[in-house]
Length: 211
Image 1 (cartoon, rainbow, N blue to C red):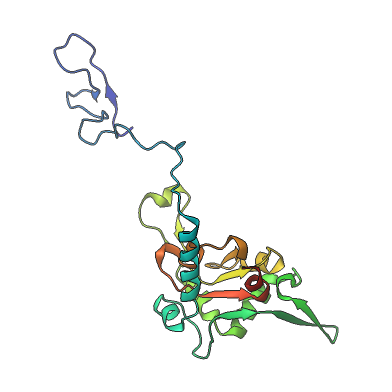
Image 2 (image 1 turned 60 degrees about the vertical axis):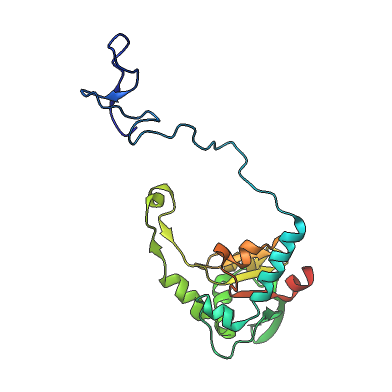
């Protein structure tokens, strides 16, 4: 409640509304200045909206097409090297152990230091600068969201699309601004957060086959 209010009771010749303590000014009631909303939104109501599956698929495909245009990706604010070719698809991973080179499926890289390995991959692809942009762009949110568990706002960076949530996904999810999506659950909101298309997207070969 905004104010300390009280009811003066019946028989006083005035309307039966809550009034500020020690005053005749009405408060807290729906029809008073600064009062509560008469019929506020209900948390238990289903607020989701239905959409035709064909329209949903068309939106996803359009968002995928936008990720292949370097000019659109750059216009969205992402940073990457000039020689980067789109779309970005990664396949194998080679690691040297005890003088021997071992090749792994990119989604099943050893979980040990997987986050560091993911960042090294992005550096090799020429898109690690966008990770720094997201890391340095974290800021305190304006408004009351600070008091509701959303104190900091992090810019959107790389979207990693995989076929399964294996070790690569576990390593990438720890990097600020990076989101991981499974190919079969991919939607337009993942590819174009906030309605802004052409997000910097990295695909695994298995994810392309799973689409």
